[in-house]
Length: 201
Image 1 (spheres, rainbow, N blue to C red):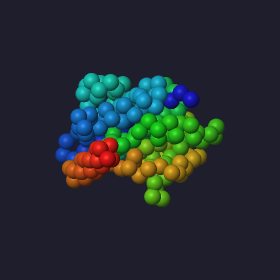
Image 2: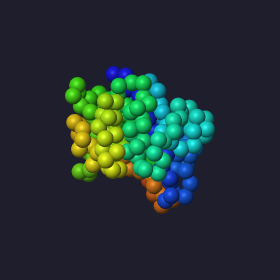
Image 3: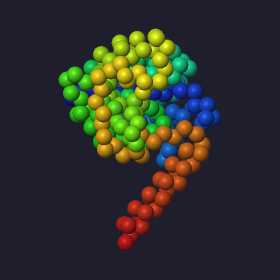
Image 4: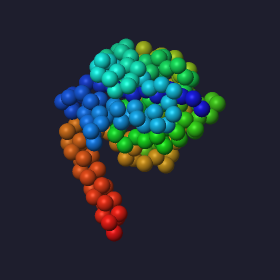
């Protein structure tokens, strides 16, 4: 099934203190990591919604402006659905460095004919910022937004959506601030050291 990809890059990054989209992990900006995962999964296009369009274009994105800057990620999801050329869009936050192509392919392949969205459930919570959406869902999400809703998980109540279970929590773990970044780096270093040790053994 063909699909578009979109990375939400328009947040204020106030807790990180610098634009999260361009914070590098293993030498790759976080937004770039999300783009790589979408491309590897077969996305027909990859949009960036909001943020520094010029810098995002250098990472290979089709960069689009945020229609409601400062109003949160729900507006970015709506913008992504309006801009996409395919009828199915996988939307990712820019700050989840372990999202991989396998999860993206699961989101796409799990869509049924009447589903407006497919959303991972991790530790009992919906993850609407790592989810697949039918573009037709944009109209109902826009209605909720115009009525004052700003929380993506509550806006899901307006949709017919399918829960995706069995998703590794690490794939949707976000890196919001310098402490998160340090913890991620420590986990990554430990994993690398363990893999090296196993190889040597």
